[in-house]
Image (cartoon, rainbow, N blue to C red; front, side, top):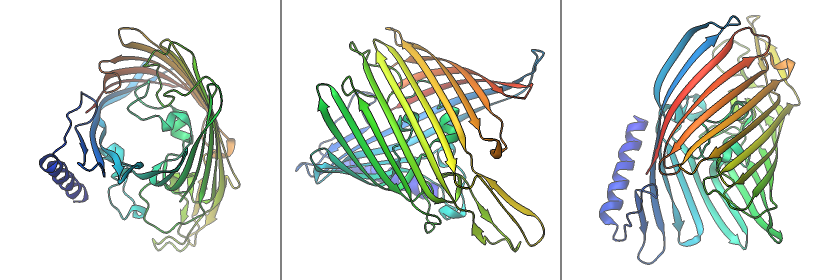
Length: 408
């Protein structure tokens, strides 16, 4: 019912904007379905729709070279509505992004009142003084580069395992961002965030402490669109950026900082939660991106540690409730070349090494991707083929994916 009511409300809103607006500008493909500016320039509203249809096939590769098992599926990977613009003044901007597909929403839980997690972003951005911008609301934290790159601007079908295991995703709170011009073409961007520490759409009281994130980005060769994987602009001069992030989640109650499972326990066996394990979790990221004449190179390193990696408690019925924080490190390297006919070939190597206490194996994934950009990232067909090697396991994994992305 929540989804139905939300969709009906959105349809009413869109219809109302079309009927009442007297300054609707019909943009080119990919520039938004609606772009409305009030007559007195007191606000603006832009509406975008995007979708990804995906095929995934998985197989097991045995040590003798035989391929066994296998599974496949077709699904709507992402289906989203995006709203943006300014209110009262261009210095006060807003962004709202709603995830309608099941994959976007994830599992319902009591921490979200058993409701659909439709809201991805709901944030205000206030440029209150010179190059200082204050963000307030729910949005992506200034974490690893691959995560802050939009899922619609990726070089492969989806993000790497480094991001899946170590990213710090979205949360609710405030952020302060600033840009500094040091000299010549050298710029820096400084970002600091204080957030709830338990992820998006949570309605419970803060169970642990708060999460603190700081990021520094360096642009020694001038600013450019660094939050896009490939060199879509085919820069005629080299472009380079570095990023460094430190994230501290005080008394975190989830196994992957603000992601993963809640570390809850029920000592009495009555079905009610009696408490939560807490631990301080530190996450570090270092990344870089380079672009020049169609060639792109991106590298990332992630490291996570916790004050208490493993925690357990004996319940009244003699059973044990145990949790392990996903700590360890990971490296992701990828490179691609965009030809003048808008075909791109890219390769990616990812290694994930969890610590022994986690009880999970180390593994590496090798990926080859081929993309055709029909209207840049707004309409594209992407495919990739991956080989997953799990250390100590004689069986390897093969995966093939094909995806179509469209953004209006």
